[in-house]
Image (cartoon, rainbow, N blue to C red; front, side, top):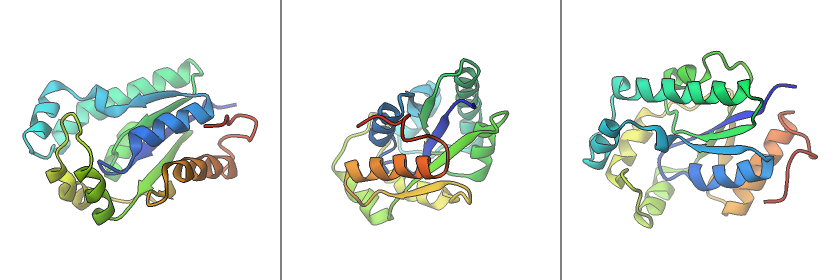
Length: 176
């Protein structure tokens, strides 16, 4: 059996961290927040309201790929929260990981902007949301979950979709 590796992707404010924590709990997996792996220079750029470039993101994405590969090699189920907005970013994350499952947390820009207005991220200002939607290349092969629903429903839909796709069995999932 291949080790479960799920990447929860979407724009800032789509719920990657909170859904990812709950999804990992439900799967009995380790949760990894991709934001924790950004180099300080990236954090400072975002904190200043400057969107990251592809060259800014490259070492971060390569590091996250290494973290995923290490978990899979250790047969450790893992859920990673990472924006992964462009196809090229997802290719870097998936390098040498043929059994990676993508879950795209999707919502309207208006809904996400409302959520961002109600929260304070440690360095990602709401002013960068539009640039994230502009950069977003929705994946063709991801499970897509609408984040307009309540949190419990979003998590339940993600667990059910992973089960329906054959990624996990009902015996693997735990109550969240």
